[in-house]
Amino acid sequence: MMTSTRSGLRVIAAIEACKGLASLLVALGLHELAGRNLQQLAEALVSHAHLNPASHLPGIFIQAVSALPNVDLTLLAFGALAYSAVRLVEAYGLWRGLVWTEWFALGSGAIYLPFEIYEMVAHTSLLSVAVFVLNVIVVGYMARVLLVQHGAAKASGAQANEPRKIL
Image 1: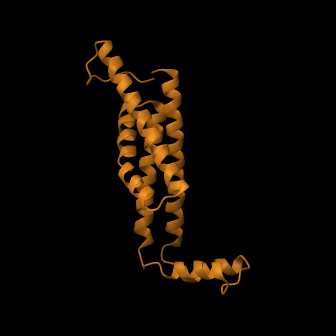
Image 2: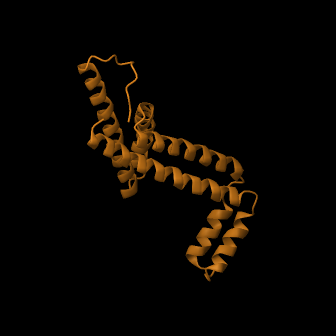
Image 3: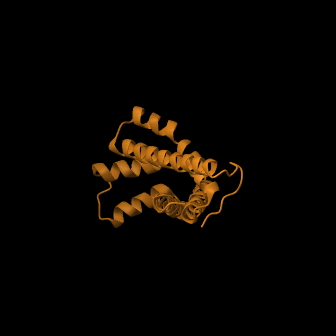
């Protein structure tokens, strides 16, 4: 594997690791909040910040939290934990140069593109455009890496389904 390819895969691995760690923090936070009165917690947070709950922004925050549906946060925490595990395994595999994670990164990045396009059309913002562009770059890079490796395998006479040595 070329050094530039390895560096690119490691950058993508770092991005995936950051997503995995962020979702792990979300999972832990949701687990901590499960079973608690969220409106009471929001009021305590506003009070702790020495804000007037009757003023505009703190009032909006408290009203938004109290309007949240009564959902089981434990279930959401498990979902975030599962997502975190997938992202961290993908990051590890990309860092180590495992071929199956290259395919997985291509597929898992491409699956979000229609949703990101919808988000850009429905709610155009700098963030939605930036997320879309970053994901297109990652998907395009992964496709290029896999196509180049497939072409190199064909040129060397290796079968496409033969495992190749990594590292």
